[in-house]
Image (tube, rainbow, N blue to C red; front, top):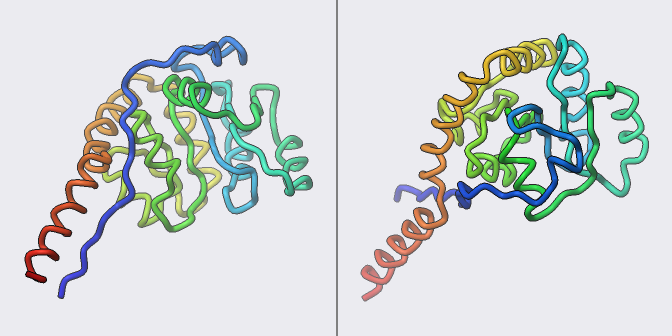
Length: 206
């Protein structure tokens, strides 16, 4: 019997949110990079900061997230940060959405092999996503993302950050692909597949 594969779903967020979050951090629309994750070593914020330091005149980098236990790691991250890095701490609801919708690109340096919820969330925002190349993430994004690595990941990520900084129109093309790709993972589509499987199960049991 062939197994069924059902992905987690996403919500498409195409209505602009304005709640003052950009003003709070003095950010311009399409004028910064965004990272969102718990600040723990496996999520590789340190890799991102090391790559970011190699970019000439970079866009600001907004790091959203925190962790109540990784004090030494958070000190390491701040030691790597330049004056263009903004640590916002945890941001939720409209604040998170506004930061996400207005970023030039979302950066995901971790290679944890799973369909990460933040990845689907950013896909639903229609974001250009720069990601550490691995099979699981590539399967989700298809050609609607910008891979770096896996060899020499810091240098490769730095090059992609420079490319995204200098090519806003090409990032916009990736965003259009992301919006189209997001349709595959909409909750409506995922739930329809669940219902179809349940109908088949009921039919076989009758």
